[in-house]
Length: 140
Length: 119
Image (cartoon, rainbow over all chains, first blue to last red; front, top):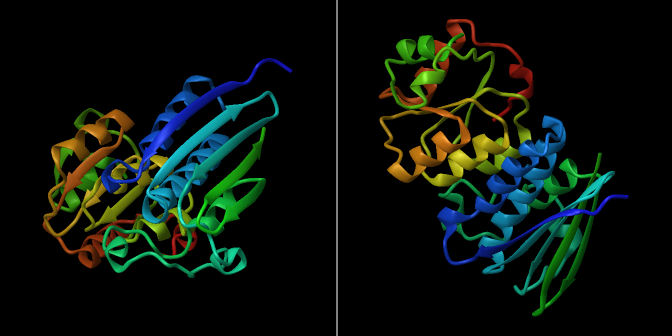
């Protein structure tokens, strides 16, 4: 296996308008690397939803993308409040986002389910008061 | 339908991406909820919306859309237009309401793949 191509981004939690900038960047890089559009779409949508979630719920965090020969791994880490009930959070339509987030076009409770839908595997490691790390894999 | 034809049909002003106005659009969707666009929309080439923020451009980019129509004369910011240009997305603005704009597009034959678009 050749060496992985890695990208790392700090996601600014204080500015909603810049949320998703890292995903736009990753999409561009994957296009330059010549990956199929369907793979790029899956990776970028899942990462974008995750980035938005980190800004809405966790005051930002870090996003890492590792590109191997057979898999792309996206790791999103934050030091936010954690997810008290993961099964509930995974339900479509369940959201704890504030009303002002809905006026910005988000907070429909589709973020986590959508991240799962667009990736081949998703693991959530969350600790109350400490933070959440989500690891998603898309196989090539 | 070409983007230039859509612009005429909706009496819309192209704000950025004029050089790509020959591009064909075969399907469209309309929503102010970007969460729903990301969750439900499949292979739609164009987004009509009345929501104005940078996430509209990023959402369209994530979904590989080619064109965004801001309805109800909503004005995207310079920053949004720059982002759209960077992503290769044509942006236009129409004074029509979303319902009327969608109706005109449908009547003109832009009906393909709409069973996948439930927002």
